[in-house]
Length: 175
Image (cartoon, one colour):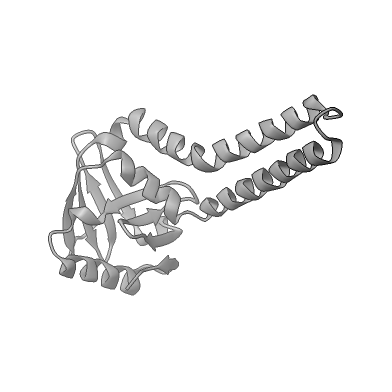
């Protein structure tokens, strides 16, 4: 892959970068469904308690509703963080310092453990979050370039220009 005139970034990954991949993903919207399920079952538990009174309460029903509420809150709050932690802690490549070369041909990633070259056609979506640029290779997997690795704001402007000029898929950039 030819580099041409491009951008070279040195990235030291962190656990919080994996969360950015989730924040840019379309699957992040499922979180609201879990909140809605939790709210509905909390309402049902309260209605059961208020309608039956303290003496006629069905403990099993209220307990079951409470379990569903706890599960929904757990799924909404902790599953994305657990997924990020598992991906980061159990993948040596996720922890390895990398050098990204971004050009009109695509993205080249080099580290001590691996070297990879991706043409722009390898990505299905590019999303810029508040803290990172996420280049998705599937709906939940991709290349993360944290904004803290840019030495100047001009480099971020240059990256946005490269994406707009050479990426043919869907992208969502902040500026």
